[in-house]
Length: 310
Image (cartoon, rainbow, N blue to C red; front, side):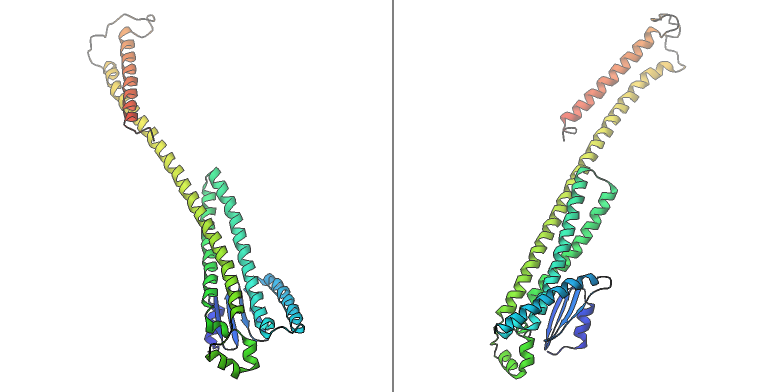
């Protein structure tokens, strides 16, 4: 089919990776590269502020042009020296290099963040992990989209339409061979399959990195659960101690109230006239010892029930 304005709009405005093949033109959208390839021209569009990626693209295209000249001088087949394939090779190579760099940077940052999180936990590190997961999800979506775009472009009719030089040289013969499905598209299929496998490898690396982040989150959750259990144990221990101390303090509190208990006029001061009486010492020692024994007995019972063994 002929290229229409809608195709240009889809490629130039669509964020998802796309390879559209129309009669006489190939439209490529592999973020951040967007390109229009004809039999003689290559038009590349990049977002504002990313002009730096054009220089490596120009260098690669210049090297591909020299190889084409050498191939033409050596009398190689037209398919081996066609401009559109050299342009596509340069676009795919540049896009793959950009994705590899993004994946390498993300993996490096992830290793640093995860190593720091395993050593010490803080809100700042958790925020970095959240940002890392968002960035990882974005890159994984883009890489998976590139793989799908390469896979969808490997249809026989679509690959046959990529021979723009042959179409421009003799449209009638091209259409006849296209209808007869007699085109040998092994070269195009090999190129597309190569870059599909390349981005598939990047996708696997990102998925492994995602699994590592999930494993680290599970490890952190386990540590938090352990710390929470320890706090519960401490809370139970203090609760038991407070319970029995309060219960035993009722006995000593009885002797401290303005009630008749028969010991108001005791004169058996063990430590002298200014010290505590014998009954006071008995009450304090018995209630303290009783409270301590009850606390230990209760905690031992809870330990035997398995509360403090996990």
